[in-house]
Length: 171
Image (cartoon, rainbow, N blue to C red; front, side):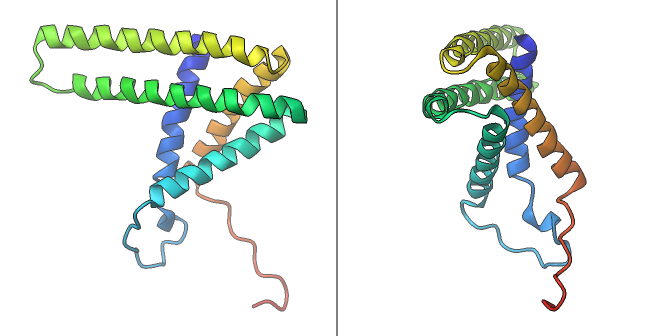
């Protein structure tokens, strides 16, 4: 379970990171454009949609399962994301060189509490997911989340796949 929690936290962080990769990395010959408001949110939405499609294809959910699964999963990911933000904020706060030992100790205590909340959330939603999915599908869900994260990392690292050449006569 701790492995899954760490993986899920990493997944959320990587998804956020992937959403912030500049689009111009795909076409360096284009002049840079002014960043449009909401562009990061649009990319995050696109990434979330890709994740939904990826998970859907991997889990082979029945229509009934899908109707029951997605609300539970969306609630879980929202809560998981909130706890991840709290954990990242605590880590950023701990980097402040002006903190006293008492403040650092308090930061550690808060960090432990957030990590416990993350573990409790994992356990809670593991139980909830088993009421909607088979145990094998829950296992596939965790594997699919890891695979999706790997794919996002691969695309961020390697760049997008090359564009297909235009079909004959379409130049």
